[in-house]
Image 1 (cartoon, rainbow over the protein chains, first blue to last red):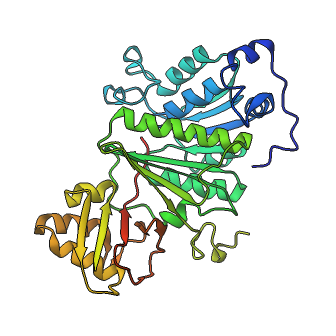
Image 2 (cartoon, each protein chain N blue to C red):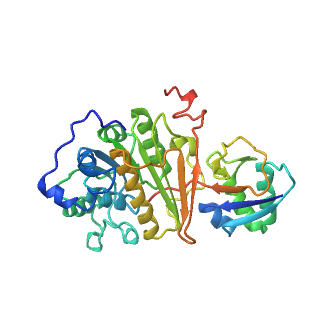
Image 3 (cartoon, helix red, strand yellow):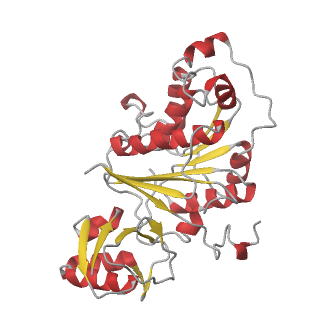
Length: 258
Length: 95
């Protein structure tokens, strides 16, 4: 991601105070914090996974959060969707999300959309973002988001969970595989509802937020061409090397992309 | 030779176990190793796993398979070495 040509906004004295525990992190500092303040991140769905990504990015001081999530809060959301509350049952999820995040960090700008990523909004929402975090449960949305981020050459953090397992990688167009290299079509066996604990989606949500922070600030080494998978049942962590599919219909040679 | 398989995500649930050992001949290829692994499982487990692993006769294009932590592109069928670890994963999402 190239933020180098951008004039990063200065930090106020309040912001220097709010972020004082992370400013001394090696490789971050005021320059990194100003990059976060000047960045826009799109989070596709703010449910079990995305709500934790949004909380962490808001707490870290990402200047503009673009959040897309449709529907109303349901009782079955509450085991993992940490931005939802019992008091918000039956109300639009996105309203609760916006209020909770504004309460946490009122210094940020929010663009909250009460619908999921779809053909009608994907171009505009990805266009507004410097980086995207894919947290949606449906592969139609994930593959659509992948296609648009590849077209617009925007990085995308890809996170997922199942049962006590989770996985994470970061796609950068032209440098790494894309989602369609790994999952070229909607998997026929995938079911919208699946078993998971909130602590599992929360764990990978925190790591996905850190991936976005690393890509924005240039700190550390994001999971580029590497695919982290782990199982909290036995605390086993594995990092696989992944590669671009030359026949990928989205980013491969035959797709016509660069 | 001996191979170690690690089933991930829905494959782990279908197999009813996280890890499986497969004894096979030297130079066995990936697809043959997976067939041997299925033969070792009870029929109901093998059937559930086959439904996730296979698209017709071929491996599903959405599987992520790694041998010794390096992804194996679907459509290739590499020869395996003694002691190799295979990680097999079906796609998962958020929610």
